[in-house]
Length: 339
Image (cartoon, rainbow, N blue to C red; front, side):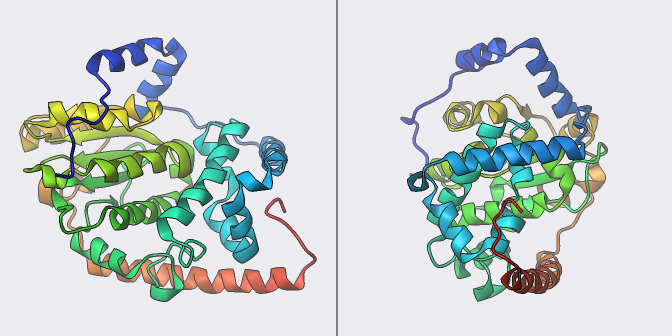
């Protein structure tokens, strides 16, 4: 069995205590993010310049033995470090708390190296075959369960990026958890290409209509929430878990335990008929028009083959642009990520 009921749990009482321990300001901020009414911080050039300088100073102060993977990335793919792990993304994800952002940045490269492997971690996160970080099996995962992790093409009514995860679309007896997690990283990087996702986070709509525990892999969920809580430069603005199964009340405490606080406090369960759940989502700015027809009853129909082809066109153009930038850097005086 891929899901253990003897695993550590986060109880309802602990959840309430955690919520009560938040300041009124923190609770108001969470509520505003869930409803899409939060206000973006004014990022003045002077503020960004100061914070980036502090970021690099803090990064420089970390012993080399504690940032081995980052240093390897800088040696092997400095342009990739700039494009796929831009420090401003990490600062935004941590509310401009510099030390937290640097810790996340360093852990990002550590986890990326561990998840993708030595041969792939330092290649671009693309769908361009041997030229990219994705493994061959990952293409089968994307095409086999296209909506398990997917960035919807249209934003919600508040202009936020919507990230779909359809738990009914996977059987972990067939798809390996590491491949599924690599797809998660890829899709999160697709979301991060939109600056609004960096500034306001993403809204998650999770379809929980699982029918058996083979569709619930705790170890894969640990990898997902470890990625969110420690590595990826993104935050969850709200997570709407729709159509949970009858046994979800038993599963939820186990899932909640592996989440970080800021994700856990933004999770809400949406129950009822298909129509009732759509109404609930609409109240939070997630319109029926942008939701997938399959599983949720929305209007959007995913053509995964066309989507992959469009992504490859985008990524091919970016690859040539990055190659030109690498060539320019090679001709320029020695520089670092801080430049």
